[in-house]
Length: 197
Image (tube, rainbow, N blue to C red; front, side, top):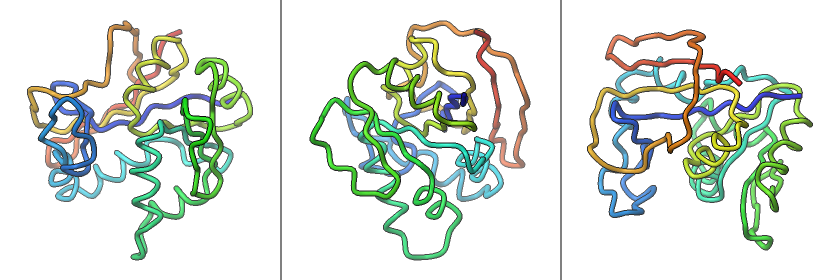
């Protein structure tokens, strides 16, 4: 049985919306997209921690909401320059949560998770020996947290206050145990937190 690990970039005020580009996610009139790019570009060590929060086990998988699947996987599989992200996103099994039974999944190793979210994710996690890593996908993460399915958070906290936007955590309380933390030279904090079930 695998573990469900949420890997996110968040601002100091808990916003996780659109860290990578201005037009990534403008829902709610959010106009600060791309807020994590410059800080992570200036700190490659923190950038790798932000992306590679899971163990990198070959037996693992990734889980995405529909929007993040299209944006993240689509972007990196279209990049032609050599980089550490494209091979991982191409070769890793990808579960995509969607309500659309006709959604096309154009990228390799992709499988649709439809129906009851909790049951579908439990089945997927049960088939994995390693980690099922969730990148982005804030709506899905909040639902999974409310269902008690998140086992670990890997949070890269960028020292910026955005003042608005979609926040990572909803109304579901969680007791977290600190596994480890690190602070980069530029003040980016990466923390690994296990959820106490």
